[in-house]
Image 1 (cartoon, rainbow, N blue to C red):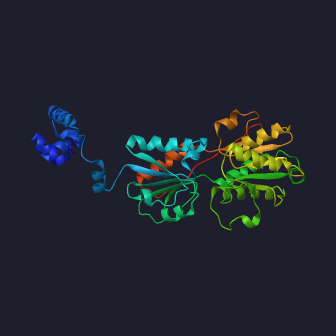
Image 2 (spheres, rainbow, N blue to C red):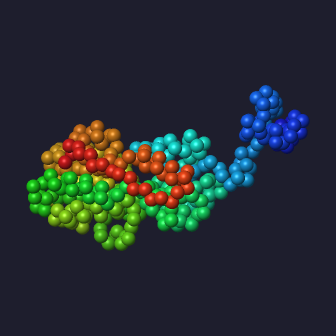
Length: 347
C-alpha cells in the first residue's frame, strides 16, 4: 500500500484547522498558544508530515540559505590543505549562526549553472582552475565575493601579495653581506602556469597581464632581487601545480641539482618550503648555513619545523570571516587585510 503524501492543505483539512494554523505551527510559533502548537506538531508527526516544503518556500522567496564556496581546485585536494581548511573554518563561523549552509564547489567544474538556481550566491576562494567559471561569475546576477583575486564590480578580500613577497625575499637577501655577489636564487612557484606539470617557467611562458596571486608574488620576489642587484637566470623558476609534499620535493630536487647550486629558495607556500627543507636536509645540505629557505602563509607546521621557516603569515581564518561578512552584508567593498613577516631560523 502506498503511503499517503501529505501537503499543508491536506494535513490542515485532516486536522480541521486552517492552512495558516499549520504553517504557523512550523514557521511562526508566536502566533499560536504553546498547547495548540504542540497538539498540531504531535498530530503531524504521527501522520508523517514534517512541515511545509522548504524547497517550494525557497523558490517563492528567492532565497535558499545556501552559499556556494567555489574552490580553485578539486574539493578532495582543498580540504586537505591547511590554509584552505582554515579559510573554510572562518567562513563557516560566520554563516552557520545565520542558518546559512555551505556548498563546496570544485574549481575544475565546467559550469556554475549546475548550482546557480538553488544558491544565494558565491564566495570564490582563489581563482578557479577552469577560466570559464571566472567568465560566468563575472556575469551572474547573484552576490559574488572573491578572495585572493578580483572581479570588476564585486566585493573582494585580499592581502598585498606583491609587498608580502617582496618583504620575505628581502629578509633572505639581506642575510648576505653582498647579496649581488653571494646570493644565488631559485623560485619554487605555485600554479604559475595553467598546467598539471612540474616544470621550469621561462619568461615567454608567463602571461603579460596576470592578476593571480602567484604572479603577484613573483613580481614581488623580482622587485626584491632587482633592488638588491641579484640576478635571476631564466631557468631558475619552477612551476608546481599544487601545494603538496610530493610535487614540491620533485621540484626542489631539480632546483638543488642545478650548477651552481642555489643558496636561496623562495617558496610560494609553506608546504613547498617544508618539502624543500626536507629534501635539502636529506642531501646533507645545511639550512640555513648553505641554503636559505622562505615560505608563505604562516601555517603552524612551518613554525614547529626545525629549523622554523621564515614566512609571511596571513590569517586565513579571518580572511574567511571577512568574506562571509561581506556576503551577508551584500557589500561591494574591497578589503585589504594585513600580513606579518615571521622570522624563523631558515635564513
